[in-house]
Every structure is written in structure tokens, then in C-alpha cells.
Image 1 (cartoon, rainbow, N blue to C red):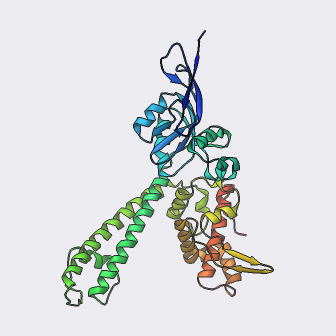
Image 2 (image 1 turned 30 degrees about the vertical axis):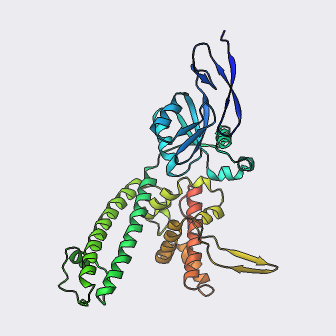
Image 3 (image 1 turned 60 degrees about the vertical axis):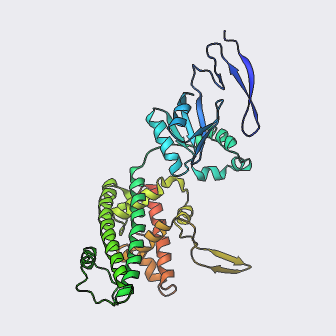
Length: 357
């Protein structure tokens, strides 16, 4: 029979926890050294992992901290996905043979009691009790590729804008073509009509650097695009929607992840940043367009697809014909983008091929 001796240990938040010393081990634990701790809730931040059990409950979010947590022999870890800060520990523990579960932020927001008392230690304890509401963690390489693709697109846009600024300073032509970029990148300005001003030599050097970097970024974008398209299954249900190609489908899948976390189309449309801002005063209803909240990449993607490909989609074409007299310009294409987002949600959520209605 194991004789135990109760001791107390104060945590950093001032709460006293009882721990027991076992006869086979000189260390003080909240669990027996020869047994698994079972389910372990972890609150993740950039620098620390706060656990729901153990004598020491605050660990560094690095290899040293992960190894110390492994000493507790957890069989299941439950945590909240906090962007990049949770990916590394989740993948590490999964590869060590531990079951890793993640609780969706949407589920957490519906747990009123979870947010009433807000401390890292309390959050970890609540996560431990949410196994039935958590989903298995899965590494998504497509998400990483899409993140890289969107990052490169942002860089490409910045290079283009800066290059146009530089060209405007020394020339009356700020248009950018691949042929012109290649010449500018090599410092060939023989066919350029330039203003010979005091700052011209310095700006020309800037143009050369920008053109070279822009060409390299565009080549990287082509490579990543091919990789994204290769990750999208040929029979994916989103590809049945007219106007949605492999790249667009890959970006949507990579950004959204699991569409099942949006139980209604309205929540998906809001996530895409396409839900209208509506103000009501008495009987008056005023629409103020779309808000700035939501995912800006999906908002831009759906707007682009709706503007360029609405004629290829029977549902969008019918919507366009019936609303073109009421809505014009950006308002019409925003409404089309919102309609397309609902189509994407319906097809993807129900896992049924697109059918024109």
C-alpha cells in the first residue's frame, strides 16, 4: 500500500493546490509517476504553455517545455488553436504519439462560463473538460502553402506600387509588362524616355532593384501556385462550381480549413467579410455596405470571381440579370460575391455537386 503525504503548493495566481508524495518517487506531483496524467488542457500563448495539471503548470513554448510536459505522460492534449503559436506544439505532441484535440474558437465563444472567469490557469482547466467538443488536430499542408502564396501576393503588390511610383518620377509611362520588367531588371534603359533630373540616377538604381525583385517574386508565385493546385483533389466538390478553378478552390480550402465550423451560410458569409452592415431605425432599414471585418483575402477572391466569371455561372448570371437595374457597379458585384459565397458554403457543407437553380 502506498502511503501519501499531502502538501500544498501555491501557484502564481495565489491559488493553493494539494499534491501528494508517493513512496516510490521523491518528487511532488499532482499525479502518480507511474501513471498517465490522462487528459491535459493547455492554454497556448506565444511564450508559454499553461497546463491544467502538474506541480509546475507554466512551461515555455519551446522544445524544453514540450519535453517537460511529456514527463507527465499525457494520453490526450486539448488546446485552443491560437494561430501559429499552437501549430508547433500540436504537431510535436502528435508525432510523439499523443492524441491532440483542438477546440474551435467559435465553440469557446458560445461557452459563456469559459469567458466569465478569465485566467490562463482557469482556461486550461476548462479546455481539459471540453474533450467532447474538440476535434482531432490535423496538419494541413495546403494551409501553409496558401499562407505563403498570399504573403507573396502582398509582396508582389508592394513591389508593383513602389515600381510605379519610381517610374512616374523619371518617365511618363508607369505601365509594367514582363518584357519591360526584364529590361529594367538588367539596367537597360535605352528604350526609355526619361526625365534627366537631379534624382534620376538614384531612382534608376531603385527601378533596377525593384524590377529584379518583382520578377523573382512572380516566379516564386508560379511555383507555389502549382503546388497549391496539386494539393486540391480532382474530385473536390468545389470544382463543380462554374468559375471556381483549382487555385481559387485551394485558397478557399486553405484559408477556411473545416467548413463544418460554419453551421449556417450567414456565418460563412460574415467570415468572408461580405455580410452587409445594416442599421434599423423604426421602419427604416439602411444598408451601409460591407464592413472591414472578416477575411480580406476571401473577400477579394469572391469579389474577383464574381466580377470576372459571373456569366459562366447560371445562378450568378440569373442574379445579375434580375438585379442589374437596381444595383450598379461595386454594389452589384459585392452582391454577386455574397451570392457566390453562399453557393460555395452550400456545395461544400453538404458535399453535393453544384446544381443550377
